[in-house]
Figure 1 (cartoon, helix red, strand yellow):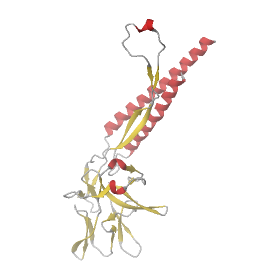
Figure 2: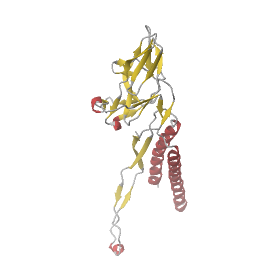
Figure 3: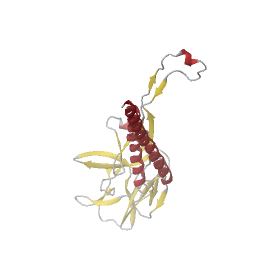
Figure 4: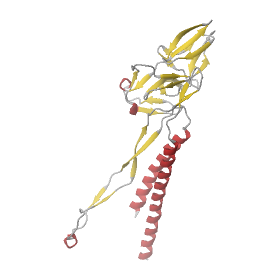
Length: 272
């Protein structure tokens, strides 16, 4: 009987992971550029139990000998759905939406004195003052955006700044407009190797060769839609359906534990 209870307990623990992922998807349904996560399960090891030889019972038998006993289900993978999200017009000059899948902006992140490059689909940019004058193009949390010549910084005394569909930062000074910086957009040629982090960022595992995963975008045509933002690709109706199915499966396994406990109690009653 303990086998029944162990299998159900193991499976319930894995189902809880799926519920956590679904909850994370739902809570980020309004996050700019968020990509839906999908959980896949796989069967754990199974055990073959051979039947005792009983020729008198073999006559007319159609099913093969032996009983296969599973050990529950395990979390196989959490896949990132890179499908393009819908666009929303913002009419804000520093907003930019990526129009192709697996394309990312680069962000220079500094945490605990360590500097690294992370990737995001969130094109909601801001201007933050820097030491010595001027402003830097940053994320909403103040992380600098990386351009073709490093973190983007613009000198003071400008009249207006806007992004165009080529990723160029157009700066107007004294009535004249010129491109003073350009976003360094990259392509994830192996998007499955990206690791999702908080703050809507993605990173490349330290053990992986970054050049085999991230490359400069070499496609033709514009991949940036200015004055727009990409919405998340979370399908709320599908998430609610998946959540109800996972909860029902959780209840079934919980019921299995209850039934196993009742059967153990029945055995103890018979023995007494």
